[in-house]
Image (cartoon, rainbow, N blue to C red; front, side):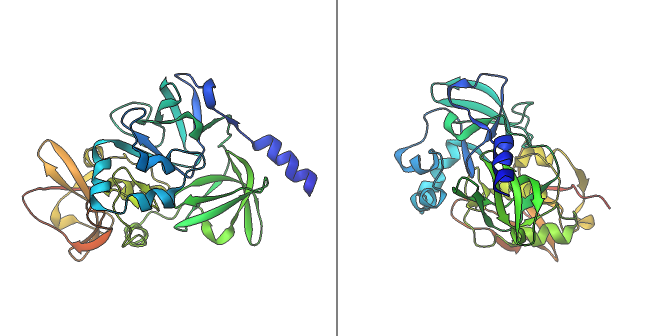
Length: 309
């Protein structure tokens, strides 16, 4: 068994990216949650716990404990990316790399959602192919054969190596490891009831601009991650989410439909319709994920449906 483990590590281990990355290269996120910034070297001292490898997301959240500190992110952060997500390198500046996250569609770049992060948070050579499972627990611990442990977020996908009774063996950017079987699941069946139920699991979690993990969500990040859990890739931001899917009227609304607010030219907020006149939303930096009555005000733009049937 030990020989098998060593062989699997040798086959699955990816190389640190470092200075080797060039525009056009493919790489993989190598931290639990990477924050992508609007420009290199933009983070303040308060954000340093999120820039290392491994990142310290709990410490970063403690540094963002006030509304004022979270509002600062609005003008500086683009998005986040989860462990093992694939990116395309667009540019580099010293130790920073601009990438596009492949499965976060956005009109800013055809390769995916763009932003800057430290090159140390990337790896190359990772094989993401094959059947996989997604972390369905809010967080789950990945125990690597090297002895290192990494806490992963809801929505993180990893290929299966071996399904055991209590722990599943998975392939990761840092080699083979195991995760508690109960924390993983195949893609959930995409139904309105399931979309709403998954979103409600994060009630009380604080809003975080650019956030799409169990450490904090913005409005469209919550939507993106919940749909990802159901095997569906939708646009990352509210405005492109509003311009895709199928338009539905107020009278046609079903649980799981997406509701949008903003100006006639731009949707800047999205929520999930929960039925009976209620919605689940990550509202703003001063509040947490919540269930509230739908606001049928003058800023309401309409609804879109991404679920078939």
